[in-house]
Image (cartoon, rainbow, N blue to C red; front, side, top):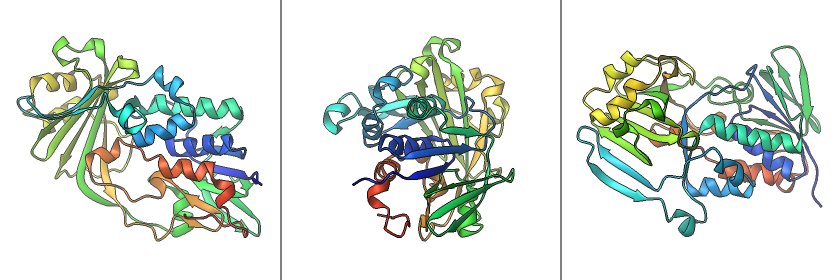
Length: 336
């Protein structure tokens, strides 16, 4: 017999909302707490491989995603200087081969789809402006204290509050991040603002020594996402929202094909962001008592390019959908 649990989720990003939706669809009571005062159009394009897309399809999100996502037919790795194709992957047969298509979507659009699906099941599921501070456990109940002095209780607390997770710190102490010497830039620009030769369909990776640029359409093809990675950089701030400038990006990404260079040059000044990639030693466990971490709060940060644009849904979905079955009799979270 399934057990209905009262679950507190910290963080309304992709991981937190995916877990929340899976748990709600499985009949649990879920409350999500987000430190931001409002949900805004933050982030850029992300790529969803078929294994992750299968999770979103099992959550019945495909119709909503059809309205906002892009479904590239090809992925091309190009010589950054000449633009010549070095390797091409045909995505068009992925649905037949793997059971789901390859999708590219703006992070904010995916978040909006997830949140709408959660609210359809529980209209008051999300509370904004609530930053978690301390996790506590007593007997058969867990609690989270927030920085405003309030407290919320439940059977299980899920920490999905990102790479700077306060819940992780409360559970395992401070775990300093190490700068990888790789810095990423990202921006978005309306497709119609680009010259015709730069309105490139599908997904493209432009490579040069120690640098690469990724570009692909998002927002149903109305917007071009562009991001770049460069190694041996000195800037170290670990943030998704730190601003950058066109001049700063162009100073690093010189010597690329004029086709992709034009995309960089047309990104509006207020659409440039910059962030340093960090790494952390892996945690010995993702759970402690009635608390479990997921997403960037739990998993070791990755050094490489594609990891910053490909969310990992499998474990999140299994955790959310199977909470009742995997919770042990003493209430502790299972790591299976």
